[in-house]
Image 1 (cartoon, one colour):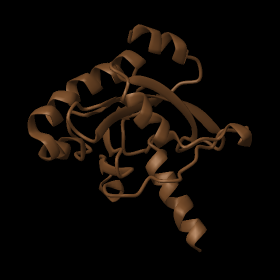
Image 2 (cartoon, rainbow, N blue to C red):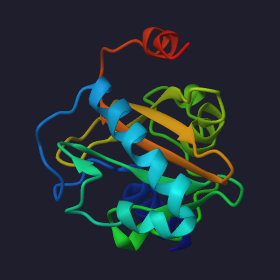
Image 3 (cartoon, rainbow, N blue to C red):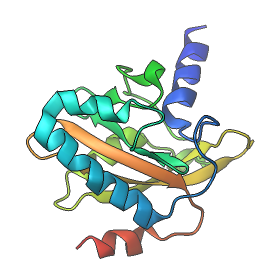
Length: 170
């Protein structure tokens, strides 16, 4: 029973392709731009600014992506347009990589990438709503200076090279 609850929570947390969000696909550039637009909100307003990312109809939900915030020190979802996820513990969630030997904790990886001077791109595999097989999702993360918050947005994308995306950040 407990295992089923954890699996359901993982599906909510990492299944970011919810049907309540737009179906048109954002590009990696649009994901990047959305995060850069979000950073000053938290820089200027601190924790109060997180509310802007909780609005499913707000300016930080765009096409099939949206900004969420993770408190990486506590590994807790600090903001998300799905209110049921705010405050959820993210420790121990594994992706759904088709190769079990390559499964990882994407939240940990995204928090680490966010610590890079210009942020970073990562990938993980998750089952997109409406599909039955795990798909590759790429995410841009950046830690808001002076806070424990990392802002993250991503899209399902089977082709874009992480190496190329991260090289553009340097």
